[in-house]
Every structure is written in structure tokens, then in C-alpha cells.
Length: 78
Image: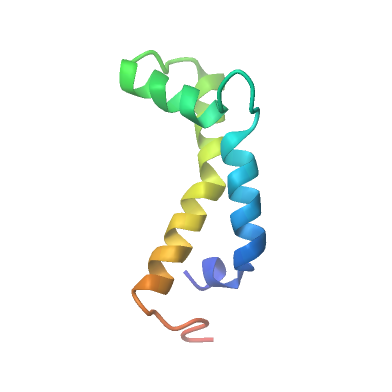
């Protein structure tokens, strides 16, 4: 978890927003893939890879913000 704490928060925020919402037209890829997951049509390996790719940085951002909200110390054990 110390690795997640080392990411600069502004860079992680900007990267998560860009990767999570790219491509912007006609709808964000992450939204499309999550809709496919809910509908049960997410079955092609490329679509599954896309979901993991576009959700990776937003997931790291959520983990980082949750750790900050819980007040966990930065660089604990380092």
C-alpha cells in the first residue's frame, strides 16, 4: 500500500479523469464497459482488457482517497 501513497495526488487525479473518460465521444469507454458488464455482454477478451485498463487509475485514486480519509499515515513502515 505504500506504493499507492507515493503517487502524487494531482497527477493521479488528472490521469484518472482522462483515462477513465477517454474517448470522450460518443460516451466514455469506462461507462460503456460498465454498462456491458451490467447487461452481461462483456465477454470478449478485448472488452475485458478495456474495462481493466480504463478502470485502473480511477481505482487507484479511490484507494488513495480512502486511505487519506481514514487518516492512514503516509509512508508507514518506510
